[in-house]
Length: 153
Image 1 (spheres, rainbow, N blue to C red):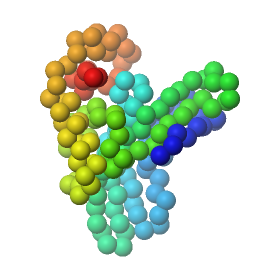
Image 2: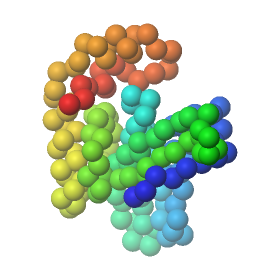
Image 3: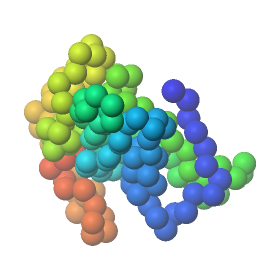
């Protein structure tokens, strides 16, 4: 998928709330979509567990949403917030999803989603980079738990 840009992004609502609204909006009348859990890591990637229930069959699926984003209020073209709306089925490069989001996902038949989940699990087993602990300690309250941050390779 391609990057989308927004000119009227309200920084007061925050990226997480904005992206929760985007992923929680169903485009089908026969589908009920709910964001079960979400977080932002490294101030640049949104991860979420999205529940989709088919209203005609009752089939329930929970899949991962991964959304890299960029905020720049001084952007010359007026596009202050841009994002790339992805799901695990795209096998995105970003694979730092916290365990509590992975735990909510239902089984998948997608080879790409399975590969992404395996890479996330491997990252969670990797040792924490001590430099990330220091960065998180200096941040404002309400930031993510440093145990969710893993080294980037």
